[in-house]
Length: 94
Image 1 (cartoon, helix red, strand yellow):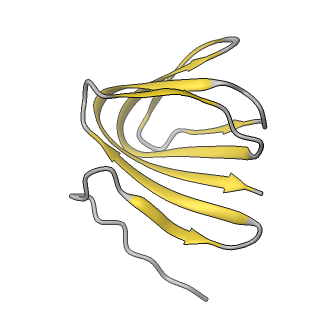
Image 2 (image 1 turned 180 degrees about the horizontal axis):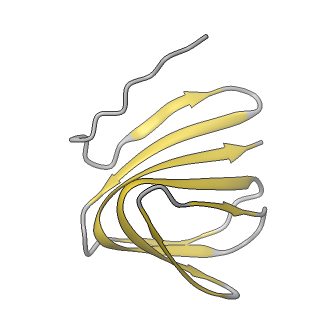
C-alpha cells in the first residue's frame, strides 16, 4: 500500500506516482490559465477535485466541476481553459 498527500497550495503540482502501468499527476492551476492542445497515446482520466475547467475536445466542449471525472481515449486532442482555480488528478493508463 502506498499513501500520498496532495498539497492544495502547490502551484502546478507534479507527478504523484509513476510505474510501468500508470502515471498519476496532480495539477493545481489558477483561473484564466490555459493548457494548450495536447494528445496522448494513453488513456487519460481527469478527476476534478475542486474548481471548474472547460475542456475543448475535437468533438465538442465539456465543462467539468468538483467531483467530475472524464475518461479520454488515446489520441484524443484536448485543451483546457481554467474557469476557476482548480485541483485536478490526472491518471495516464499506459
